[in-house]
Image (cartoon, rainbow, N blue to C red; front, side, top):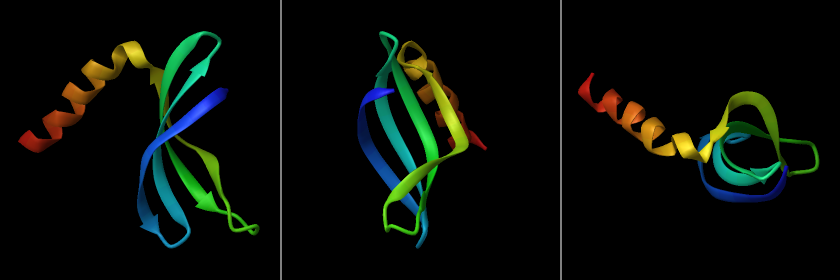
Length: 71
């Protein structure tokens, strides 16, 4: 991936956070929501835990997430 832009993050613990980012991969704009961890160097690195999808599905994803408010 290239041109990764972090939109924001939520701290889960002192060494773990949930990061929302957007990037371009093979000409496709991608949304990534992924768990990151604090490594030995004091920098955050990504894990395999998360989701990545084409930005064309963003509106549907937001609608789906908003259904959690109805539970």
